[in-house]
Structure formats: C-alpha cells, structure tokens
Length: 67
Image (cartoon, rainbow, N blue to C red; front, side):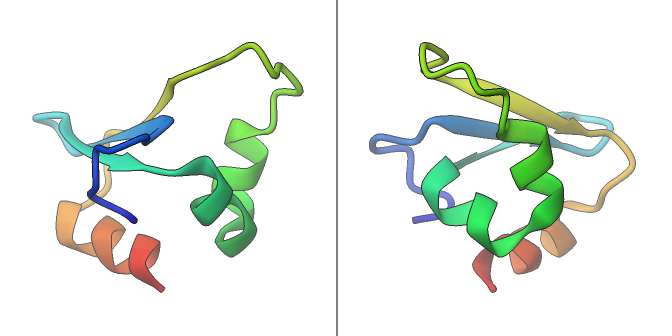
C-alpha cells in the first residue's frame, strides 16, 4: 500500500529534492506514532495532506513505512 498512488490520502515528501512517496493514513498511522501525531488533525474534511521530511533519506523512510 505504500508507494501505491491508488486512493492514497497522504504524500510524504522526503529529502532535499522532495521525492514524493504516496501512502495511506489508515496504514501508516497505527504503525508509527510520529505519523499518527502529524496526521491526526481531527479534520475529517481533509482529503489529502503531505508530510515534509527534509533531513530524511528516501530509502530509510521507505523501510520505515513498509514495516
């Protein structure tokens, strides 16, 4: 589900070049408290949002999301 753009509701922008990784809030929030706190705005009307991780390394973020 991570990296699959179909029905994704979160875009994670990683690194200085802003590589975009599509993800699903329902998948990543239960797996990672960091994303849960970033994406739990209480706003049900938000359809798509993005999280920017400027100092992260793309392969590391992909591994984190797939666990």
